[in-house]
Length: 534
Image 1: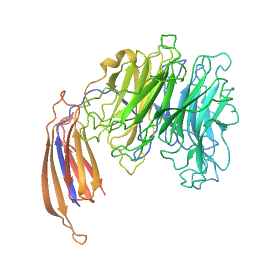
Image 2: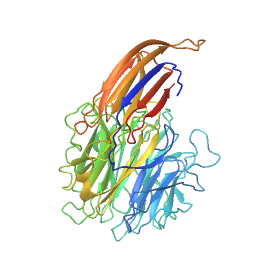
Image 3: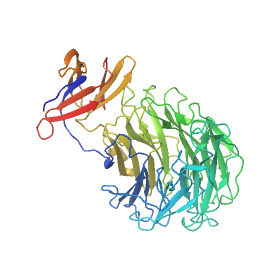
């Protein structure tokens, strides 16, 4: 290989030893941004069937409990424009909710003018053309979520949709607002009720902390619908006792110091919006409500929870979900929650940087509780090192988890280094058997330009020796001259450390070449990888 250095060269020498991993690579988009925002659900009539989706129009389907996946584009006569949400009902039907892309409305996101729901009757193999709700021109409809009533007599099998309506999305004008909208279906998403506004107040239309957004619902066995959302640096709660025809008065149940648009290092944006579930099991916590969200109350990002035993009239004190108490400056973010309707056990999924001392590289964890949220055990689902996409690349507003009859299905996106979708399907009885250390032999690089130069962070699960060379080159010269060299060694101790990191700042800002040479791979051959940073 003949390489002509153009700025900075990093030579990495490492030993590769690979171990088994629990996550499955579902999809590699081959780009930095897409796919992202994955959603997943387990069929309630066949738990080996798992369905998922991701931005912008990916649909995935597995019939072997997530071991292998079929990936196809999702199409609808109403268009498909992301924000996928998958949901399975008691009859085994799968619902794929997403934004529209209406033809002829391509200016300023005016094409997202309705919420579309497509139904599958064959376990996610195929979907119908779909139906829609919320059309209210010229307003825009965004960020949907879906749930169903699987238990009550008066509203059995009714579907519920909540979302945000914008007068004009991303507008800073005071005359433009946001509000929470709601609609229901009594015929398995063939048609929908006329959409109504359920929020008593309005937010701005900036798509930021003072926008009303992130409405999710849960339904109890008596058919009561509970809804939470974020806005104005607060969490709101409301409920309906008549199948969604009328709603009560909005109640602020918590303050959110960071707002829902959280600032996480090395991320374009991070969503701290709330998710709500209800215990519909026949156990001791039947009817209990759980709400999880993200906030930076303690300084760094953390995952928090509140519960209610009386239908939302009162709530417990706020508690931290995860058990990472020893790294106060490391981030846990983008939480979601699922509850097993058979047992009442709950699982909270989130991104976690507890293993990254630089608060850069990200794992995926779940916190699992069998006692109504009084205590949790943390488990790491990912063994692949994931780097952030950076401050200038959108990487998604949520990840997802589903829980049914003792089976957990989780899905997330991560840059390793391109945008990819990973999943994990787990029998809850085997949680303690998840691998405690990362896959051996990995090396990841993340760089960030600052005023002083480029900060390069290298993380590894093996020993690495690196030579970092800065080059000086004028545009009219063919040859580059060495300006300075840096030596960097990572002495990773397998089994004792999850990730070993080193960080260095070099004066070069652009035209960087990283030449990584990996030796002693699994087949004993030398491998070469070249990365360009422009």
